[in-house]
Amino acid sequence: QVQLTESGGDSVQTGGSLRLSCVASGTIYSINTMGWYRQAPGSQRELVATIGTNDNINYADSVVDRFTVSRDYARKTMYLQMNSLKPEDTAVYYCNIDRFGTIYWGEGTPVTVSS
Image (cartoon, rainbow, N blue to C red; front, side):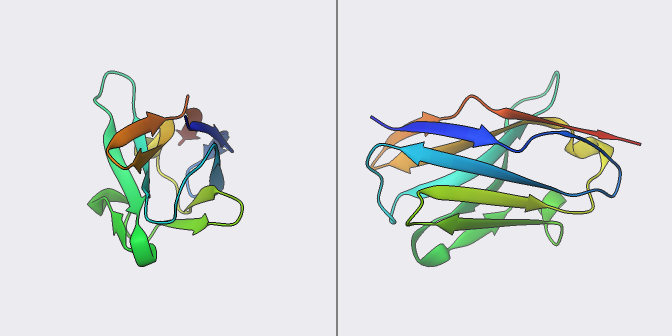
């Protein structure tokens, strides 16, 4: 069993920065891909970024050059550094992990960006 706990969400103004964290409890492996997703009010959950084996990283087009995903394997923690935030980044941000085909999700952390 794996539990994921996100933190770091807050309310910021346009152009601000936040760093989200996702801590995993339970047994995970470096080959398990982790990801950040977000869900805005009235919208479907969408991919933000994933980080897999050998730090293979993918970003949604909307966050390229603004967001950076990273992972501390020793601390079983994934981060999302978000810079140049825009109102359209407002959402609940979730992390997940694909542990050999079983997907686990955290409860989410809210991010609000005001203009």
